[in-house]
Length: 120
Figure 1 (tube, rainbow, N blue to C red):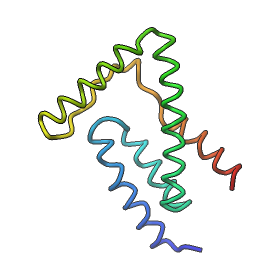
Figure 2 (spheres, helix red, strand yellow; figure 1 turned 30 degrees about the horizontal axis):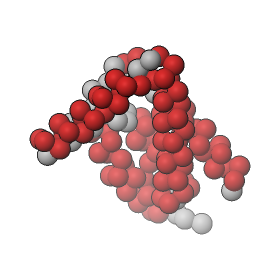
Figure 3 (cartoon, helix red, strand yellow; figure 1 turned 135 degrees about the vertical axis):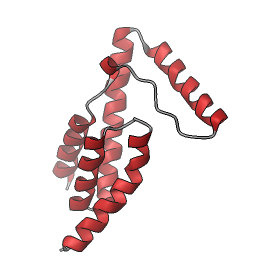
Figure 4 (cartoon, rainbow, N blue to C red; figure 1 turned 180 degrees about the vertical axis):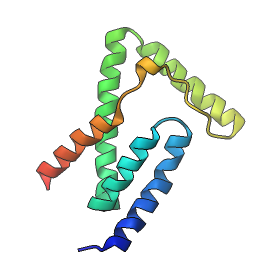
């Protein structure tokens, strides 16, 4: 069983890893903190698996929503424009997103944690 020092080390590493996503406005600060605490409790490797599963679930759901709203092509266009502009400037830029298109990532983290918990 890990002690408080191990927990805090895991949280610190997870915050460091996911700060870039916050900086690029891909994740909110609360998402980064939730991911970090999750990684602190279950371990970094398992925490990363949970985050990856949450990202997959969110991507599938987001894709369904884009298709349903007729925004798939424009969404892909915005993504590739963002990638090319970030590569041209050689730095991470804030991702252009409309507030109505934001997915609450904590929900997907919760669902993926439940799935992870059922498997373990």
